[in-house]
Image: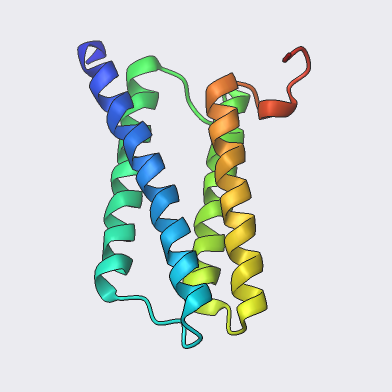
Length: 133
C-alpha cells in the first residue's frame, strides 16, 4: 500500500485546503447575510469534503504505521480536528448572533491554521515547537 502514499497524501492535503476554504466562504456568507442562510449544497459539500479528509487521514495512518495516541503530534492533530469540526458546527447551526458566528468562525480558522502547523512540523506544539527557527 506504500505505493499509494503520495496520492493519498495529496488527497488529504487538498481536502484539508478545501475544508478550510469552504469554512472561510461559509463564514463570509454568514457575516454578510443576517439571516445566516447557507445553501444545502454547501452544507452537504462540507460533509463530503470532511469525510474524504478523515478517510484519507485514516489511510495515511495505516500506510505509514503512525497512529494517534501513540505518536503525540497525531494525537494533537486528531484532538484539534475535533475542535475544528465542533466550531464549524457552532458556526453553521448553533450560533444565533453575528458576534457568536464571528467568534466561532475566527476560532475555527485559527484552529485549522494550528492543525496545518502541527502537520508541517510533526510536533504537537506546531509553530511554537522549541528549536524551530
